[in-house]
Length: 201
Image 1: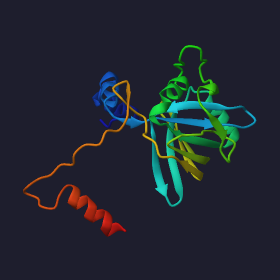
Image 2 (image 1 turned 120 degrees about the vertical axis):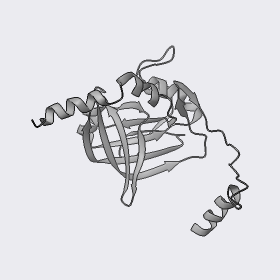
Image 3 (image 1 turned 180 degrees about the horizontal axis):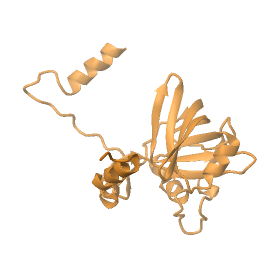
Image 4 (image 1 turned 30 degrees about the horizontal axis):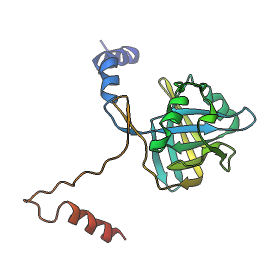
């Protein structure tokens, strides 16, 4: 007896990692912290997200994932643009505000939590963000509980600053470590990295 596509999908889900285990394991992953924003006729909206990455340098594309329940989605659909703000270690309060956890005296999704300027698209941009990527919507994909946005980058801004990191429900900042060196592999470690950097120039 052949198995239907529906039965196969059900069995695959049952064989997969339980939801709680998946969430616990993902909680150990260190990620940068970003706030995705949009602005236009529908108003200004922003949402804290941890799933953001580069897709392509040619053309310049970035990817962000936003929970489908967030009110920012309707605004992005109407505006067709969004800005990705990569937060610095000084922006933990901004991250909390746009994750729906405002500090005392602040409202949820309150833009008074930071210094904002308009990006070329009209989307709000944090003035001192580590980096910001102003985008037009290139593609939108529905994936489970989230919408995956691929944005075509039209403008970039960046500043020297330490990025904010999130892992194990805690904010952190990058800390340099001594590179690994293996005696059995001469030239590895800092020497190898420097040589590779020079070769690529």
